[in-house]
Image 1: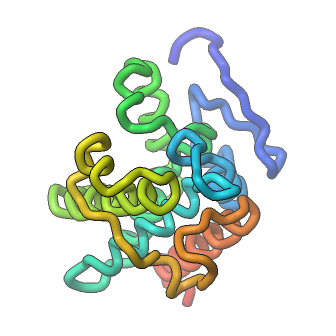
Image 2: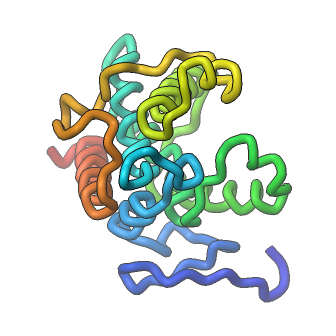
Length: 210
């Protein structure tokens, strides 16, 4: 960035983050968890009383990635899955995928800077062709399932209108972990708590503190 352009946000921790020039030290884990829990997928639309948070989606993708892996994922690989949408929690915005190309190169560059700061802070390993392909499958299966159970798209609409090539799941992959009503979006405080617990657990395991 050049000049004096700034886009400050004040975080719950009282830290402040310049979205146009983020650094890895600008937020704490609680800020990220709450930001993801208060950022909603599907444009905030839901057939439930609450919309679905990116925090809950991230935990779903982690669970699916674990289930589809041929061998157990390393803590670093699991952290990469959990944090795949972490930039949205700092930005407070999750654009639906077909809209993103219309937001222009500036939005793409903004997201890339946030992703870069997150990668540095959490020492996230780079994707390779295989890990990216496996992640995309888990992410798209999660999307198909959310479209059906959370938003209310039909199975035919998911295939023909949303162009998602994967079948939605019937069973909620988070059900066996957290119980509750399958596919029901969680309140923000609960989503933040569960995301933060998973994040701290993976950081401890990766760093050998368990």
